[in-house]
Structure formats: structure tokens, C-alpha cells
Image (cartoon, rainbow, N blue to C red; front, side):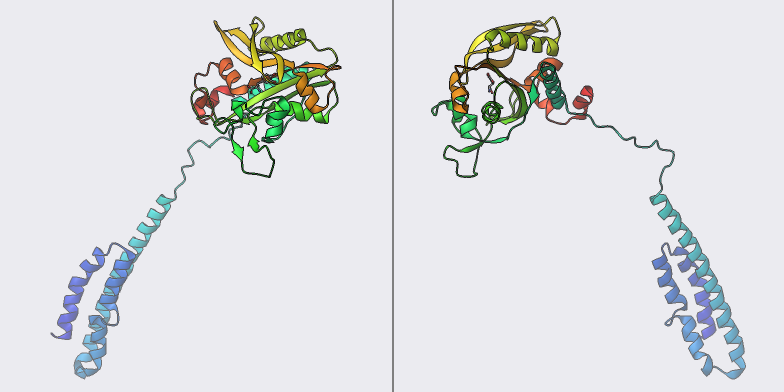
Amino acid sequence: MDIREELQALSESAPARIAAASTMEELAAAESDITGKKSPVAAARRMLGKIDPDQRREVGILIKRVAVSLQRDIDARRSVLLLAEETADLAADAIDITLPGRGQTVGTHHIIQQVVDEIIDIFVALGFTVARGPEVETSFYNFTALNIPDTHPSRLETDTLYVDYGDDDEGVLLRTHTSPMQARYMEQNDPPVYVVVPGKVFRSDPLDPTHSPVFHQVEGLAVDTDITFGDLKGTLEMFAKQFLGKDTEVKFIPHYFPFTEPSAEMHAYSNGRWLELLGCGMVNPAVFENVGYDPSVVTGFAFGMGVERLAMVRHGVTDLRYLLENDFRVLRQFV
Ligand code: DAH
């Protein structure tokens, strides 16, 4: 084919190829084919020297015209594609400034912590102080100092979570109640004692509507020279009225705990039914002896209550797991 014919063919086919390029990459490939080193335009330029001198000027002008025209098409297409790419990029990171802002929510205490604080406030108002103890305990404080015999089933691994730590002869465990702080507190402080102890406790129980392997208790201990069962009843009745309402009735039902003698459960009448609220009793003289108090001089009462249970009674929660699942629909009700 004659150079002129070839250039003519190129100037007819190339515009469609340029227009069909839909990305910058496709356009670059088309440009290289049309005006690049191996293109017909480049080949024509290389051949110019071999052409008859009388035709050279005419062919030269033709090459230039075709090259300029195609380059203009390519540049025009490039501007179009660039604009499209920029528009797409902008759309991709668009921020809708008309959307309302995300407000900062202010946190609150969890309902369990709120109930702990409320219980503590009631006793602090009566003159009690607050103490805390270790969650990892020795069997001595968790059981032995509290007059719980070696054979008691609560010591078994079916009930108590032991930890592999230290070389305590009797074993190291996650405390099963807050009562060990009775012994620790009395060892460290002379009477009189008026203390409440909030904290986490642990038992080998599966999670179900009324049990959890981790829960909270508040322990109470009052020791003085002439504390009576009447003081216990008056104090705990006062607590029930503060916590559940001033018309709340209570009753004390005999029970057994190794660390108190006599022992009782306090039940409260609330929302049409009797509910067990806590365990209590007069501190067993054996416990006083274990901690170095003289049982001929001091008497005292103690009590322990489960916080989750009280929170459920108080707020009509039917399944303990609702309090533990961190479901906003539940937690939001207690802000
Ligand atoms: N520690 C007992 C429990 O976890 C509760 C309890 C009962 C605590 C009687 C006391 C008490 O201080 O006097 O079931």
C-alpha cells in the first residue's frame, strides 16, 4: 500500500478506536498504536527520506496533518476521561455534610454497680464503713476461718473454682462469697467493727436465668460489746424498707450457716409475694476465736446478699442473663 493510502486508512479508523477507549489505560494503548514508535505515522516518517524528492513535501504535509489531527482527538479524549475519573473519585469520598452529627453519649454505671452503690449508701448512712478484699482467696479465709468444716460440700471442685497458684496447703481459689473479708477485717481491726464489703464472687455454676459463675455480693459485719439479734433485725428491716419501699414487711426464717449462730434468711414482702433477700445471723463465737477476738467480750451480727438477685427483684428483671449481655435495649432502661 502506498504511504498516502495507509495514512488515509489510519485517519479513517483511528478516531473510532480513540473514542472507544473508556479508561486512561485503554487510551494510552491506542495512542501508542496510532502515533507511537511502531505506528504507521512513525513508519511513514521513517520512509520520507526514501520518497521521490518531488513528492516529499506533499507527503510530509500529509503526515503532519494526520498526526496533528489524531493527536488532537487523543488529547480531547484524554480530557474527557480525566474529568470522568476525577468525578468518580470525588463521588467515592463524598461526605454528606447535611447528615446530623453523631452525638457523644455519656456513660453511666451498669445497673449492678448502681445497686451496689445504693446498698452501700444505705449502710454508710447507718455508720458502716466500706472495705474490699481479694477475689483470689485461700481456702483458709474462704472456709476454715469461717468455721466451715473440711468435709463441707461447698469446698468441692464441683462448687468452687480452684486456681493453680502458690503452695497453700489447703488450696487457692476464687472466693465463693464475700464472707472471707469478715475474718480478714477482724484480723486487721480491733472492735468495734461496722463494715460492708461489696465485691465479685465466683462459683462453678453454669449460666442460667438465676445463676452465673460470677456475681456480686455485699457482706456486712457489726461487732461491738453488746450487739443483739434485735440489732440485726432492726438494721436489716431498715435496709429492706430503704431498698424496696417504706411499707415493705420482712420476716426472718431460721437457717444454717457455719459462721453464724443462730442464722436466718430475711424474706421481704414485695409486689405481692415473699422474696428471699439475704442470709444473716449472729457471728459464731468460733469465728471470733479464729481471728483473735474474745467471744466473752464481743458479740456481732453478719449478713450477705446477692446483688444481681436484689437488682432483679427491684426492677422486675426475669432472667439474670439480661443484665450480663450488654444489650443496649436493656441497659438503656437503667440510666
Ligand atoms: N456467705 C453466704 C452465702 O454466700 C451469705 C451469708 C449468710 C453471709 C449469712 C453472712 C451471713 O455474713 O451471716 O451464701
